[in-house]
Image (cartoon, rainbow over all chains, first blue to last red; front, side):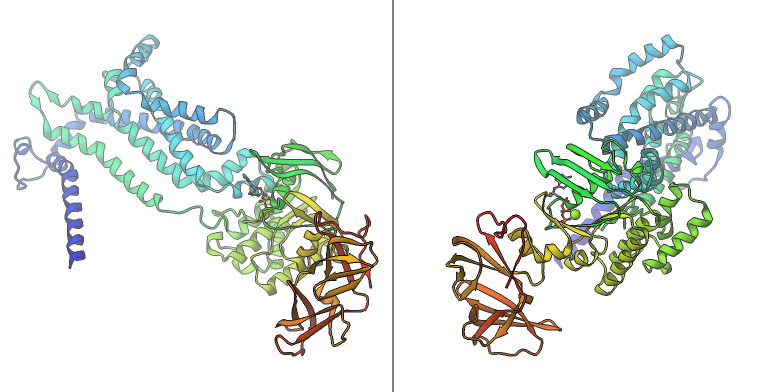
Length: 271
Length: 359
Ligand SMILES: Nc1ncnc2c1ncn2[C@@H]1O[C@H](COP(=O)(O)OP(=O)(O)OP(=O)(O)O)[C@@H](O)[C@H]1O
Ligand SMILES: [Mg+2]
C-alpha cells in the first residue's frame, strides 16, 4: 500500500514539473494560432488561424531573412566547429603530451568568462574590421563560444571508446588519420552527432552577441523576436508565431539526439 | 621473413618497472612462445615489438634494422590481441578484409582470401554478422582470422586460443602449426596453456616479473628446468619439490632418501616429476609415506602420498586401487630424472650446463 502511494506521488510530481515546464511553451504554441484580439484571453475556445505566420514572413517583418541568417550562421558554425573539435578532442584523449591537462583547462576556462564581459571588445574588433552586421562576424563569435564546449563533449565520447580497435587498425596498416577516419569516427559517430546538434542549438539560440553585433542584414531569429515589441505595444501573436519557428527545429533535433544517444556503438569490440 | 632482436629493452610505466633490461633474439622463422604467470610482462613485450608501446630504453631490430621509431603500420606485423580489438562497426567479413584493403590488395583476391581464411577458422557462416552478435570464442576467431589473412614478416599472437572450447582449441592449434610450417613466418606467441606451448614452440621463453628465466626448446625446458620457478611452472601436475639436505651422497628428507652424486650441503630441493615415479611395494623405496589421495584422470591415476610436511605425487596406472592412509611407496622409474636445486637462490645445482641427473 505504501509503495502504491509512493508510486502515485512520483507520478504526480512528474506531471506537476512537466506542466510547469511545458505551460509557457504550450501557451506560445496556442497564441501563435490566435487572432490579435484573442491573444490576451485565457480561453481555449478560439478559431485558429495561420494568418500570423503569413504576416511575420511578409513586409515589414521579413522573418524569412532572419530564418536564413540563423540557418546559415548555425550550419556554418557546426560545419567548422565539429570537425576541428573532433580532431582536437581525439588529440586530447589519446596523446600523452606534456602540458596536456593545462592546455585542456585553458580551453575550457574560456567558458567561465561571462559573455557580457567580452561582447564589447568583440564589437570594437568587428567595427574596426568593418564586419559589423555580417553573418561572418556571428559565425566567428559563435565558433569561439561553441568550440571549447564541443571539444569537451566529444572528448568524453572518445575517451569512452577502447583503444584496442585503433591499435589493431594501426597494426593492420592504417596511418593515424586513416584510423580516425575508419575506426574512431564511425565509433564516435553517435557522440559526434549529438555534439553537433548541441552545437547547433547553442548557436541557434545565441542572443546577446547577435543583438549587439547585428542591426539589419544579419539579424537572427532570437534577435528578430525583439522587433515585435513596437510602439504600438507587444504583438504577442506574431512573437509567438516567430517563437514557434525558432522552437520547432530544436524540438526535432532534440528528438534525434535521444534516438542516437541510446545506441551503443562500441559493443562487441573487446572481451 | 625476419628475425627480431630485443637489446636491453626496458619498459617503465611511471615508476613501475614492467620489463627490466630484456634481451631476446627471435630467429628468422622461429616459433617462440612466451610463457609466464599473469602480469609478468608478456603482453607488454609484444606491444613493444608491435610498436604500440614506446620503449623506455633499449633497441628493437627487425631483420637487422633498428625500428624503435617506426610506427606499427611500417613494421609489417600481424597481431592477435588478448582482448581481440575487433572493429565493432564492421561485419566479420569487413573485419577480416580490412588489413588487405589497407594494403591495396585487389578486390577479387581479397574476397577469395577472406573466404579461405574464414573457412580455416570455421567462421564462414558468420561473415555478415557484427562482433557484438558473436560469442567470445567466435570473436577470438575473427581476431585470429584478421591476423592470418595476410602474410606478414612477423606474427604476434597474444593468447589467441584462450577462449575456445577444448576441441576447437586442438583443431586451431594444429591449424596454426600447419600455417607456421607452410609460411615459415617468425611468430611470437603468448599462452598460459602448457600443452600449447609444448606442441607449438620452437623455443619457449619462461618469463617472471619482466625477466626471462629460461629460454630453451620445449624438451629441455621440461627435462632441465633452470630453476625452481621453471620446475614448478612447467608440467601438469607440477614437479614434486621436496626440501631436504644432502649428506654422504644421499638426499634425505622425512620419508624420502635418494642417492645423488653431489657434495654434502643443506638447503637443497629435490625435484622429480610424477610421471618419473611409480608405485612399488619395495620396503627400501626412496619415497615412503601414507596414501593421501587418488585422482583418476582417465588414462592414469594420480597417487599422492604424505610424508612429514611433504606431499609427493606419482602417476600410476588407471586401474590402481588402494585404501586412503594405507602405507604407500614410490620408486623412480628406470631412466627417471632427479633435479636438485639450491633453496636460497632457486638455481639448479648440477652445474652451469644445467644437466638433469639420470638414475
Ligand atoms: N598501461 C599500464 N600502466 C601501468 N602498468 C601497466 C600498464 N600495462 C601493464 N602494466 C603492468 O605491467 C605488468 C605487465 O603487464 P602485462 O600486460 O604485460 O602482463 P601479461 O604477462 O600479459 O599478463 P597476462 O597473462 O595476465 O595477460 C603488469 O604488472 C601490469 O600491471
Ligand atoms: Mg597479457
